[in-house]
Length: 224
Image (cartoon, rainbow, N blue to C red; front, side, top):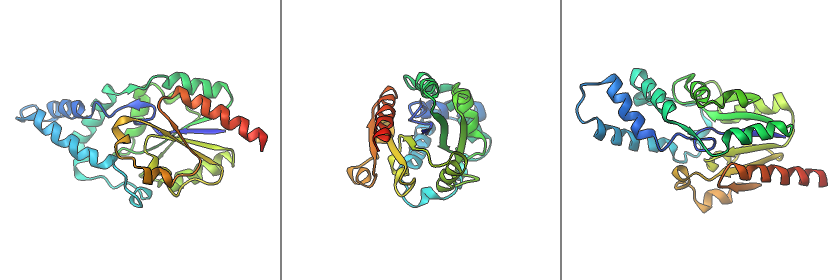
């Protein structure tokens, strides 16, 4: 089967460091600017708006707001990459899935600036563990990215792991299983109404539990 992973909040904690990354970027780019701590807090609140559900709009290609363009934005992403930490079991679970013969891919959204998500994936130390890396948002919409996977790998069972379950709604196909990786930062935006719209939904609170989900799905496939 194909196991596809989102990045932020799914394999790594890149959320708890957002404010500190803004502060460090401000020091790098605007060293004489007063009130950098206060500005970093404000920018963090602005960034949070882009983590909320955006039904309909999320199917489109990303259009970067001005705040996420230019030298300062790149500095922020670089600082965020330095501060990002893999979640417990991230490397081990990816390795185990590959050992069991599954196709493991990175399946995540671009970070407003082209090429930054790939940069952050490499900085995390997880990049080389993927069989494929698919990034949607600039060149491809999420739906287009999913069809690319199907064209490349056929109709094997597609296990989609993401901390933002609203991305699942209206996407995928009859051979897609949806795994919500519960991550506190984004879980606060999830409602029962959202979850009710997702078929074949599995909920995990740590990456190790994904191995149990995959094995259960493997057994179910044999019984069909």
